[in-house]
Image 1 (cartoon, protein in one colour):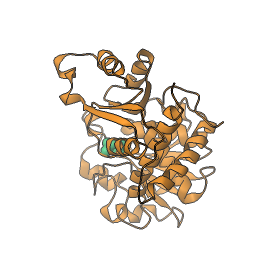
Image 2: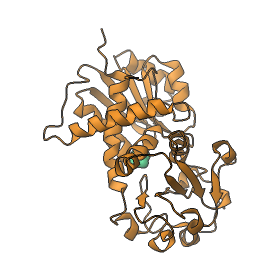
Image 3: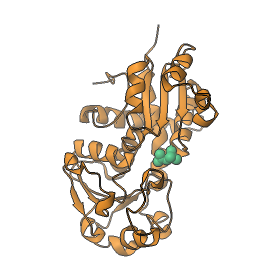
Amino acid sequence: MQTLRRKDILGLEEISAEEINLILETARSMREIMQRKIKKVPTLRGRSVLNLFYEPSTRTKASFELAQKYMSADSVSVAGTSSSLVKGETLKDTVRNVEIMGIECVIMRHPVSGSSHYLAKNVEASVINAGDGMHEHPTQGLLDMFTIWEKKGRLEKLKIAIVGDIRHSRVARSNLWGLQKMGAEVVVVGPPTLMPPDLAVFGVKHFVDIEEAVENADVVMALRLQKERQESGLFPSMREYAELYGVTAQRITRAKDDLLIMHPGPINRGIEISSELADSPQSVVLEQAASGVAIRMALLYLLLGGIKE
Ligand code: CP
């Protein structure tokens, strides 16, 4: 398979291992372009992309915009707060109005789970989900897998412990679907109040003790506490959460010696992960951000790369 036979990238639940392999291999070629002095190829010249962000973003938005520039696409970015959404325009009307101007691909971040699926059904343009509510963040899952794959040379049979707020995390959901499809063993650790009610669907083991969960782990992935999506009373206080579930050097002694430390960002230092560990040689947090550009270039290439007559 040399191309993605799909219009949209909405979640890793519906993407096959074969497609994930193609995306990772393509991202490796894209990373080579990023390492050049002149980071510019004509691949997407004449193709038009809309970045539509209804929630804050640093990494995802910047990396999509850079990916578009490196590949010579024409792009416009619209923030929810400065769009005609505030005057009452619907999502469907918003996108159909820019689609008629020539937009072929919409990158959307939205606070509502399922919003990307809704949009994809209602427009002809390709839709890439840049995070929809608590549902999925597929490009983050792909860049996390790419980072691990580059460092370890494989995903199969690696043990990956995902720590923290699984319940409200779209990053966790995309990683749970994607990593397991690629043959990794995934465990989750955190207070029961931060586990999703449908955890059984993923078929992963849940630990409440972090030291037990990271035993022989190849990767520990700490998650951001999704305060904006949490109801109150899920854990006593930030300090107590950090004391029990913060990833620190003392808590990972039972993991493998060549353990990778990951966090999708933005990090709440001293809460989800200690500063010492986030900045340690084991940490690949900044590599994750760089992988984001390569993965997003790969997706734009695979969805839009062909010549359009
Ligand atoms: N990881 C991630 O999605 O970061 P941003 O919210 O900054 O895009």
